[in-house]
Length: 171
Image 1 (cartoon, rainbow, N blue to C red):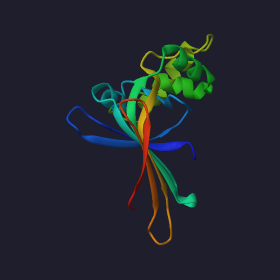
Image 2 (image 1 turned 135 degrees about the vertical axis):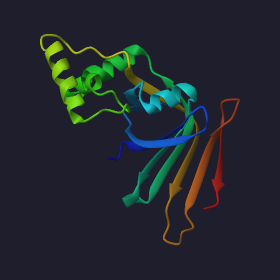
Image 3 (image 1 turned 90 degrees about the vertical axis):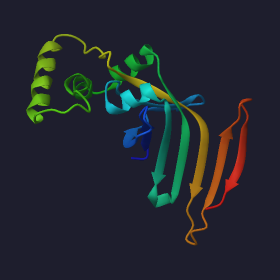
Image 4 (image 1 turned 120 degrees about the vertical axis):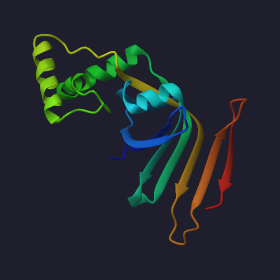
């Protein structure tokens, strides 16, 4: 999954957490992923929007690290992406109380059946608890592995005046 990355967040108490998410869009202003706003990552992002992303491609011996600030995308952007998803994924956004403890798998199955019935004769709307975040980068690090372990590391940092500085880091 070349478009998957590790998203690291932290709570208001600075407790870190990381998980794999899928990159759904990117442009000059940032990197976009979608999730349940009431999930653990959604709660952490509301408390502390500073994040780190790590893309790793073992076969290529390459890694890209990105640090930045996450902010919600517009409701229109979330709607557009939501409606491009397969029906099962749209229903899943309604059926899963993401990150919440549940008694057993039947909870999700029952929720799914309820929402399949509810939306059987109409378009499935995007739940208000689900949408996207855009990570606006302030640091990139490009890592290229080498057999000698003397890897190449190039870092770009966004300065307050909007320019980027470039430096080489020791491996």
